[in-house]
Structures are given as structure tokens and as C-alpha cells.
Image (cartoon, rainbow, N blue to C red):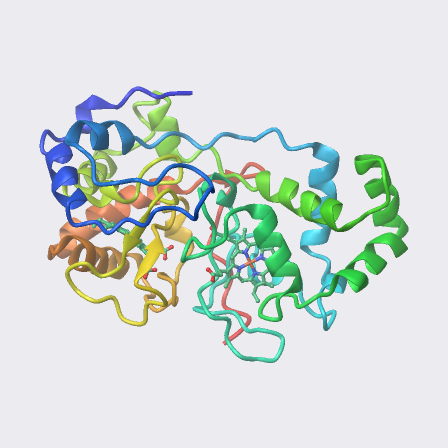
Length: 333
Ligand code: HEC
Ligand code: HEC
């Protein structure tokens, strides 16, 4: 569904600012033969049309039986090599779909390479992972299940667990019409992840026409977000997740793990601290000011940063009827 642009809050300079930003972007083409066509710096009208944010849907039509299976697998520690961890260990879907720590620990106690991004709304991003080098949710599931950094499981033992547990084997047979195999396990996790959506944020309610869903201060923050060019990169249904961009165009961002990253989604960003690919920034105002400096060559006043933070707070949606929250204090250092 297309949502009419709320013209009233769109400052006249926004398209121009976005176009100027556009000329500073380094944009990678997507992997050969894969996915949507690459984005290039584009004329102001096109930027104008493309940076529209659309609401998160409440479902993507995933099969409920397969979703239920994927939900069980998501928290099943038996799939991991040491039997001590599951997807939910790092992606806490009872809170924000991620973790409170900068970097989770692998089974051997060393930190994973990057901050854990939320699993919520990942289905709405065009590529996965901070670098955007993972093409799809099924590819991501294969990596998470088997690479030592994550669960480190092996297919023979994963399938032995699933086939040997009557609580899983029967439902797999019913949902797939065959014994659980690698493709079915991946598909069940993929189905569950496609159900990890957070509709009904106040911003989406406002997009859908509820004029009272945002305060004046939040609308002003959105106007600033548009006007100074944040939306040239953070745009579309996930307010990000649909472009590759150079990181640190004007000023270097410390400890970044690659020169070019996928622009991350800002959905639920108010509850997914710490920030950036290394989890190195603890607070949202700090992340916003660093972004303005590094990506736009601009110094925000504390009041301007607070204004944008107020807008970002309206992007927190709900899962199973409850607004996402920050996780309780970090279980891992
Ligand atoms: C030890 C912590 C850990 C575990 C366990 C883990 N993940 Fe992750 N997950 C991460 C990290 C870190 C990344 C980012 C990797 C990168 O960008 O290099 C990630 C990325 C993802 C993403 C991409 C999100 C996005 O927006 O790009 C999805 C989806 C995901 N994981 C799902 C899963 C599933 C499903 C499982 C279980 C089969 C799992 N993860 C297990 C830490 C973990
Ligand atoms: C040129 C593209 C670009 C522009 C413009 C831009 N960003 Fe970003 N943004 C990125 C990229 C790429 C990252 C990932 C950086 C990293 O992890 O090192 C990011 C990360 C973020 C994060 C951290 C998200 C997380 O989950 O850790 C926030 C918050 C953010 N941006 C907000 C903003 C705001 C607010 C503005 C405007 C002041 C802005 N960005 C402008 C590309 C951009």
C-alpha cells in the first residue's frame, strides 16, 4: 500500500538537501545477478519519491504451522554445538530482538565480530548483516546455525535432534509433508523470522492518518531528519536497510568493521542500544550527533540532536501487542 506523503511536515529544502547528499554517496552495486537493482545518486524528484517511509505490515503471510516450528527452533539450545546457546541467546525477542551488550560472546568466550542487530523487521531489509553481504534470511539462518561464531551446529546433529524429538518431528511432518530435512529446518526459521515484525509504531499510525499520534516536537524532529539529509540514507519501509553507503564520509567513525556498510534500519532504534557495527556508542543522542558529523559534515546542537531523538522514539513498534523494550541489564560483559 502506498501512503501519501504528509506534505505539511516536509520542509521545502528537503529534496535539495537529499540531492546534495546524494552526490557524496558511495553506492555499491548489489552482488551479481541478485536482488533489486543498485541505487545511484539520483535527481531530486526521484530522491523525493523514494525516501518516503511506509508503515510496517502486521504480517507477511507466513504459514502459521511453519512459524510455530521456527519459533521452537529459535530458542532450542540443542541445535548448537555445545548445547548452551540458541538464536534467542543473542536475539532476545522478548525485549528488542538483540542484546544489551556491544558484542555477544561466542561459545569459546571471545566477542563476536560485530554488534548483534535486532532480528525484528529483518525480513523487510534488502540484504542482511552490517555489511549487507548476506543475501537472504535463509542464507542467514544457515550461517547462524552452523558457523562457530554463532551456534556452530552441524547438520547431522541438528537433524538428529529435530527428527528424534516427537514434539518437533510430528509437526515437521505435518507442516512439510515429509521428514524434517535441512531445507525444512531453514524454511521454518525463515518463516518465523518473517513473523518478527513490529507494526503499530506511533510514527506508522501517523503515516496512516492519525494526526495526534505524534507530538509537535516529534514532528519537528522528523522535519529536521528530512531537512538535513538523514533520510537520503535512512529511508523506505525500514527507515534504512535498502542501501549500501560509505561510512565516515566527512569524519571517520571509529572502529567500523568495513568501509561500506548497509545503512541500518532505524526501526526500534530507541530500544536497541548500543549503536553501530561495533556497538561502540552507548546512547542515541551521541549516535545521532556522530552520524551528522560523519555522514553529513554537520555539527548538531544538543537541542537539534534531542529533536531527532524524539522523532526516532516514535519508530518503536509492537510485537505480539507489546511495544519493544530495551533488554534488562546485560547478562554478558
Ligand atoms: C552469538 C550471538 C548470535 C547468535 C547465537 C545468533 N546470532 Fe544472529 N546475528 C548475530 C550478529 C553479531 C549478527 C551480525 C553479523 C554481521 O553483520 O556480521 C547477526 C545477524 C543476524 C541477522 C541479520 C539481521 C540484520 O538486520 O541484518 C539475522 C536475521 C539473524 N542474525 C538471525 C539469527 C538466527 C535465526 C539465529 C539462530 C539460528 C542467530 N541469528 C543466532 C549474533 C548472533
Ligand atoms: C550517507 C548515508 C547516511 C546518512 C546521511 C546518515 N546515516 Fe545513519 N547510518 C549510515 C550507516 C552506513 C550506518 C552504519 C554505521 C556503522 O555501523 O558504523 C548508520 C548508522 C546509524 C545509526 C546507528 C543504528 C544502529 O542500530 O546502530 C543511527 C542512530 C543513525 N545512523 C542515525 C542517523 C541520523 C539521525 C542521521 C542524520 C543526522 C543519519 N543517520 C545520516 C548511513 C547514513
